[in-house]
Image (tube, rainbow, N blue to C red; front, side):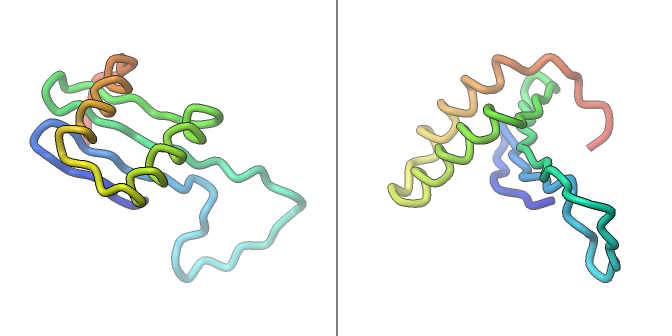
Length: 94
């Protein structure tokens, strides 16, 4: 789990669900499909959305673009606002 962004309004975490923990000896029983995603927490509404699959791929493209253009906090939060509109799950423990 990697914290990518944290502000008064939003938090974004990159979750590598199948990544072994440090020190784990993993024995593979065959091919595994890597499952990773992004959790976006809207701190103002107390809700979160988890992006995986094609949504995660689209968000990763956005992150790559941000790394090359260094956007303002307002630009980042405008984009996160769009994803936060999908949030339905209340944040219970964080």
